[in-house]
Image 1 (spheres, rainbow, N blue to C red):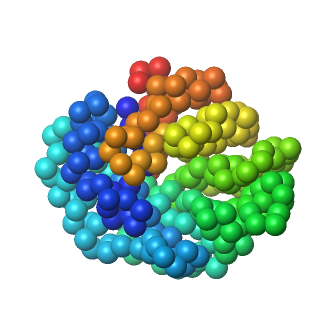
Image 2: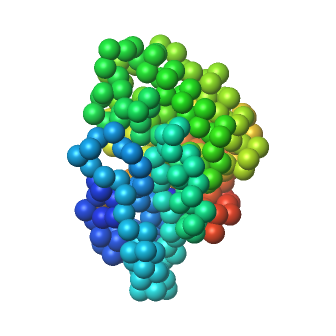
Image 3: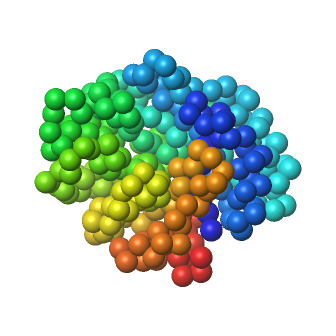
Length: 264
């Protein structure tokens, strides 16, 4: 089993040291994990800064790889928080630093963060979703320096009322943009932890991704504490099978590697 969305105390919203997380992963029998700590340049909430020392991150990854490498594979990843005006800045970061795996996520839209609710103030669920997906589409048309899109329907987690529209048309456009470029998506199981019926994306979007020809798919807990590593993975694997997938993906120096779901 592989968990490809894990945070450590290099992320501003996480206090778990890498060692504690790695030991938990070994204890529950994971074969491979990838640390994907947050870089969210220009995050609109000034009370938190999603940046960290890249040299220190490199050194710590190498350290845990050396200390635990005979028991588990540990990959170096990153999760970037995309905004339209930051594309060149992220290109510069990713051209100067090597990562096995890059998650491209949108935690904001129209310059407002989702978590605080500022983005949703005074607008309907439908208007919120439309703005979110349109901005994501705009970004992926101009930016391709990543491995997968993270929690592609994250906007739904913060809605106070469910949208009456599924936005499959624009999500299909996003998939048609990323799939030919060899980019994928993740199934982020944290949705279940936050009270959603399924992980992110939901089953209908997973099926749409498959219908569009998508094959690159990672599984991630989005864990910020070691106790939630590989959260709901067994049920999530069954969900992926239900959506028609046969493989899960890991990454090595930016290249995808496929593993049969039937063997996990």
